[in-house]
Every structure is written in structure tokens, then in C-alpha cells.
Image 1 (cartoon, rainbow, N blue to C red):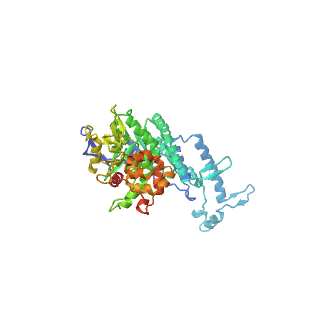
Image 2 (tube, rainbow, N blue to C red):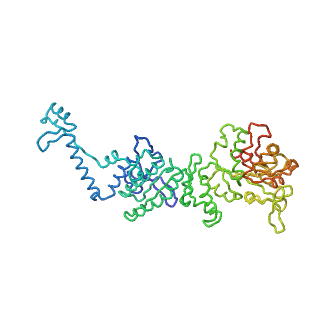
Image 3 (spheres, rainbow, N blue to C red):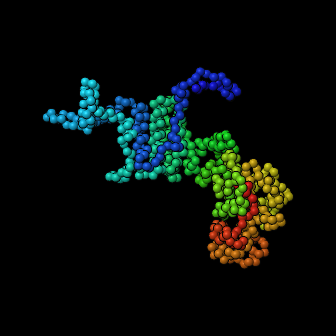
Length: 526
């Protein structure tokens, strides 16, 4: 049984007051919900004509919403009546114009039944045709795909993606006709996971057109019946999300036994409004590049091509070196999104907090000093007093880096726990060992740690355009900052070559190791 509960408007809460029992019909006068479920039947099995079956459902709702006296329905009924009469004669037989009896399909069995009692005992039967419009469409129509003027293919010959899309459109029209027939004050149509079986291009087509499609019906329902229509689409597709107006997005996240719902509009306020550069940048970035962030459990932000190319292998190496124990899942088996953000990771912090996911920011410490104009200029890490990295400065803004003394040294000496803020951790270059070489970028950090690997593969790295020709003394002297600055030819070629020449099962100088600052960060996010 269902009862309506009391509500205290002043306290904004439900009370214990209870009304009389209420009926579903009464509820549906207030709100009507219709849905297209994710587990809808989609199959190209010859025995399962899904789309053909939907024509009967559409006809029923269409007829109910229209005036049954319309000529199209009258013509159909006349044709069905003619067919019923003709089938009666074929089933039961008839007399010809000359009086000759023409047997029907069931004449013999009818005669047999007559012998068991005859017409006087009520066993004089006839087989009558009663063709139903709905059943005629459901069971006796086939949907086909036109291929030119003289050729068509049955629905089972097309891919599941198109079956799914056409099926959704048929169901939308059917459900909306039902809303028109008996609308409630609030009419809600939901579509679950329209992306099922469809390739990205088809998903784009769907989401680009669905809003205008529904708006047309919404306007008509409002004009004809003075009722509202709303639509909810649930999706796990980054392709669909990227084509949506972000103002329409509601983000759902499970936290323990609860589910939180957030409007993307609330993120706008964190950035200070729709016209703020930060919010516009994040919206544009998500639209063009990484809507998958909405569906990730964790994220790793990297600066550029080098880390992007090497990150999967670095994750693999960390997993192999530090075998996961207990319930810990290997990095490559987790739902981690790796996104390339350049030096702008700090702009994404409000977004990450909105999403509530664990995030690792991998960035360069970017050793610098100030020039005569007070601006940051690149510097050798040995003499640097500052970092020019905006993401690092923003991350530690609450703890106030000591610019007056030696900001760079302060960053190098920070402990691992100092680099964590809520669910976000930052990772930048640190010495591999106490008192060891302090790098400024990924390249010199990698070269310092993997000097023997570089020397072992010197010829190949130079031949593949990763490094310029160099003498062994240039790397042996230990000034890896100058070596990287002078000899790394192209960063993407450098990264690709590291993958090519890496031999995981080889000797120490035949395989490379992950720089400590990245390894430390990956172990944290794992």
C-alpha cells in the first residue's frame, strides 16, 4: 500500500503525518515516467525481429493519440474487413456461381466434427478470420533497409548499432504518443545508455539530434495540452558527454552506500562564473579532449608527449617492481585516465574536486632564477632559487613558499606527505638518492638515472633522432641538465626510442628504470 507523507515547508523536511491510501492512477496524474531501458532487446538473430515488433507498439500509441475517424484508420479497417471475408471463404469453402461446392482449407475437419453431433447439437463450426491491426503490424511486418531503388535488406542484416538507434527512435515516438494520450502534470522520459552497440560517430549523431527532436515534441505537448515534458539520458560514453551542453550535465558518483548528484553548473561557481577564463578553458578541454574524465576512478595529469608515450610502460614497470599485495589492483588494470594538460594542471583542481576522484599531478620543477626585470628565467638546478612552474606554485599557495630565501631548495626538501592535498598529490623531480643529482625536467632526471642504458644504446638513439651525436664525456661528467639541453633532439622521438630499445628481460644496462619522483607518485595513486 502507498500513502502520501506530510511535508513541513518551514523546516524543509518530511513529517510523520500520513494521508489515506493513494492509488497509482492518482500518482500518474501528477507525474508520469516512461523509459527506454538499457536492457532493451537488440539482436540480429533471424528469429528476433525487434524493430518489426516495435511497429505494432507504435501503431497502438499513435492511434490512441489521434482521431480514430481519420481516413488513414478507416482505409486500414476497410481493407482488413475485405481480407477477413476473403479468408473466411478460403478457410471454410464456398459455393461457386454454378452452385458447385468449392472446398476450403478446413472443410474436411469441419465435416468430421459435424458427424459427432451435427448442427442441431451446436457443433457446426466455422473458422473466422479476425485480423487485428496491432497484431498484423507486430507479427506480419518486416522492417527493411533500402539499398537503392530495387534492393532492400532485412533488419537482421544490419549492425546492432543501427538496430539500437532505430529501436530507440521507435520507442521514443511510442512513449511520447502515450504522453499525449494521457499527460500528467510532469512527464518524464528517460533513455538508458543509448550508446549500446554503437560506434562513436553514431553516438555523436544521436546526441546532436535528440535535443531538437524532444524539443519539438515538448513544444507541441505544451501548446496542445499545456503540459511539460522532460528527458533524462544516462550514459557511460565520453563521446556522448563531449557533445552535450555541459549546463545540462548531472554527475552521479557512488560514495559507499550513497550516491551523490552534482550539477555541472555548481562547478561554474567554483571558477567564479561562466565567463571566467579557467572555466571556459576546462569546458573547452573536456569537449575536445577528455570527457572520459567523468567516468574515471582516478586521473594522472602529465605535461607533454614524453610522459604520454612512456606512462603505460612506467605503470607496467612500477607494477612489476612493486608487486601489488592484498586487494591492491595493478595500475594498468585500474580505471585511470591519463590526461595531457601542459603546465595548466592547477586550472583543473576545482574540476578534480568536483569529480571527487584521486589525482596525481606529474610536472617539472622547472629550475629558475629571476632576471633584471623580475621575471623567471630558466636556470641550472645547481644555482636555481625558484621554480617557474605555475602548477607547483598554486599547489603550495596555502603553505606559502619562501621566495625571499630559497624556494627551489624548499621544494626539493619537502616530504612525500607534504605533497598531498586531500585527494590530490603532486610529483616533481627529486634526487634519486640523498645528495644525488637534482633534475629540472623529465629528460635530465631520466638520463641521470639511466646513464648506462643511454650509453649502451647510444648508436640507436642517435640514429633514430632521439639524441644528437655526443661524446661519452658529455654524459660521464654528471651534468645531465646541460647534456639534456644540448643533446635531446626531439622529445617525442626520445620517448619512442626508449620504448623501442628497452629490454625488460635483459641486463641492467639493457633496460631503463622509472625516475623516483614518478614511481613515488604512481605507488601513491595505486
